[in-house]
Image (cartoon, rainbow, N blue to C red):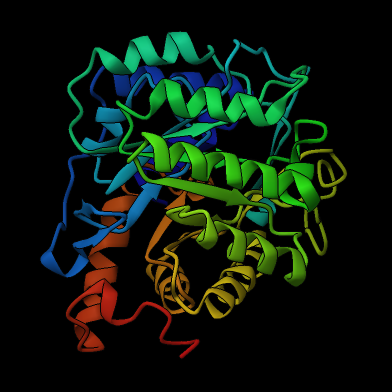
Length: 347
């Protein structure tokens, strides 16, 4: 048993949200592993941004922009703050996070708990960024115009973010996923396209749910390309909870993340790459815990990847281990850059 797993056994005696706060506090004190195993093999330019490695921390950990630099210093190629809504929001009633240890998974129904855009903007605008920081934008639960909430977020953050994520795929805000379909998605993408044409040059990506039909996915991809959206994140958490080993929490409402999501999210990623013919950059998320998982996502069409849940189970040394193993596997395969292998399993 490694050192982190001994600590984890103790940490897992603590309620998940309390353990999360302790992790944020540790990072604020500078307690994190050093960044190791950076290599030119892992470098690439995507979204007109130079990434030192393709592994990002997904939104949900640093919700309020408290520790972006510490996350970057621990080895991530980029990090994503949020989800942030226009107004402060306490989220759903606790308990709302559940560890499914047998499945290496988590169910959450947090509900975009965050400090609100003004506080997060103030916090982030005071720091000197040490790498690539994206900001994930959401809509307030009680908002009467959810599309406008995203436009407010874009205007608020585009000058300080390296990229912006439009999160219309969380299952924990009623009606939010409706923005992915019908007239809603057309209106949203057209509105974002108009802002981009007028003033916003910051890359904007859309984060999608894994339950979309192929027809819905095709519509979003075509409309995204048409409106100059810069990329897509595939995928958010899933509401499907099939074949889970856990019997205590598997019926809890909320989004499932972690190992069980790998297959479902990767299939959708692959579909998106085929539909788009590689014309729009894709970020692969869901179930990543090994270098093989990263390679699978990249070969199915991802230019970048993100993770979060595996960090809970494997600890902060996971990132250095992933980069080391990823470099070894690329060298073994005779690969000289990430871009050489994007979509090769599809092609």
